Length: 525
Image (cartoon, rainbow, N blue to C red):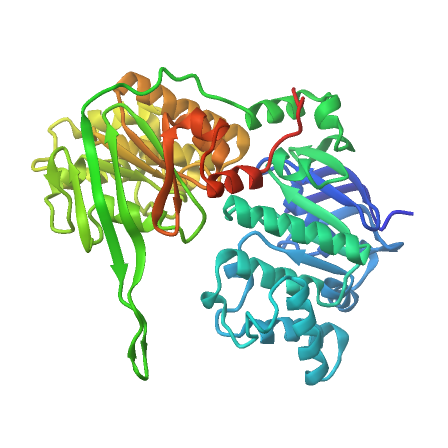
């Protein structure tokens, strides 16, 4: 008998069907990868197992966990099951952790609630769980708070909480989406090791086929609340049969058609850029300054697409803020269209550089209609254009939307449509340079493919210049002409994209490429 057996699971919220006859199994020590896009029902399937569902949700069917039907249990029994028998790792660790409690206290709390042991025993188990999650106390004291850790370290704390009582089943819901490639590889390896050591079933939920390709035993592909294909992970090589599965695989390997960058004039130039931050104060004075950007030099030519890659903390975001004139630099020079870039530069220069952010919903005012959102950058121009409304229509149509969308609010659009609106806003001032800061990292693979096609098309039609910042090496390879690799504030490798990817010269570049999740050789739709 399987550890987890879901049979003909239907779930509706206030009568609206969300899950439609889902059937899945996970054996002890087995890794099942559940793949699907936003709205496919994969997370709701996981929440059904935990019975952590919104008000008005009704489940029918059977969810057998080690022979017991979860749907027959009362809330008291479910509370004991959560954490003790089933652990869960969420996508965003900062929302899963309490910022006011130390990491040791949060893991110990989980133990005390479910194991009913004394404080000393709970802290001992918390210490062990954190060590198993590769946060040993000698290097990561249990008195630290979440904000004192990196994103990958915070995710390890969440994993420690989930495995503290050695549950039979671990559910990991998009546990690596926001992490850079090397940290992602470490977290996936950690999850696989824990499942193997404890004989624990692992239900790994993701929208990326490449993430599960290297660690899952079986895969299940979901669409619109149904499992459309299921089988061994070898299906990726043997051949997926369902049209949706094939489309998902094709989107994962999609390469936009591009004409390539023009050999235009230099529009942005950085020469020996240095950005220091003051050291922290302590009882004996102040620590030495921290150098976030160290002697960085490069150029971007008109019509070119330049990629910037590196792990979290390498200095990418700091360099980007300096290039946009949002932060001062302590050495070197940055020029845009021949004029110096600095925090006090005029709005006209700022209008020539626009940004598309990672989270389009978070970068918009939800109270404004799309027309006002897209036209917002007009305040940077000396005089707002007389045909402002026509310019908004032109920008929306350029990204595949319509004039009717001007009257809507941002919550009325899907994630991919919101990112199109963000691109339209960046186009509205007809800039010379668009900075794309992790602009597609939060999107499903098919939506990501559509947005990359759009960016490639706009570049060819309008001669746009892009600085593309991403931790996703596959995206950078698909959309850029040249790429720079950043490590500890320095550019350690730079060159034509294909050359860097196929013939990397620096050890760090080779490490990044080795850590990136890959589909198996021969995988084809």
